[in-house]
Length: 170
Ligand code: S3P
Image (cartoon, rainbow, N blue to C red; front, top):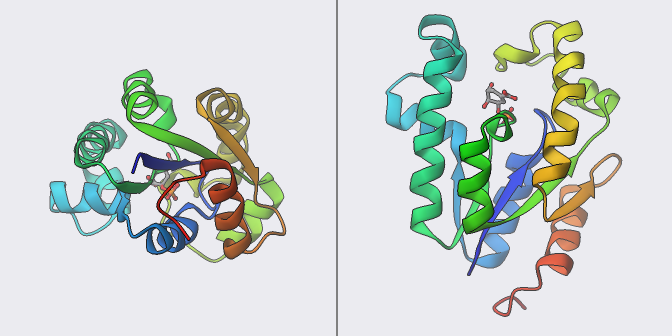
């Protein structure tokens, strides 16, 4: 099976959808954030940003993507900033079907309310600017776009499979 990569802003639902999708496809689930923790030995994304900084995080993140696309048969849930690097996009483009899970900023704000695991969502004003900056990058990188506002994860999975049409799914 060709890899599927889910991209989109923090809180777009990538992790939840990726887990369901991987189960349905019998594919390996790869969470780039989890892989970054494994490769770096840090306990959390916050601790990496706070002690090593974003640049270090991005370098390990790229290694995680490289490993995942090499493995094949994966559903890859990409951290929201993966599309910031042209090298990452190139790696994914050549090796995965890329699905952009779109969500409005309002929906994202609601979903992330009360969480503190995302260093780049600590200040709402900055996150709003980041969202606007990244939107065209997600769109440009995607093979398919799915709007996730008001949709349940199961419905999103169904829509992805309709577009992906793998030969090995019931
Ligand atoms: C980031 C998104 C996070 C995580 C890190 C940076 C970003 O992943 O990789 O906090 O730059 O948007 P999620 O999109 O899974 O929250």
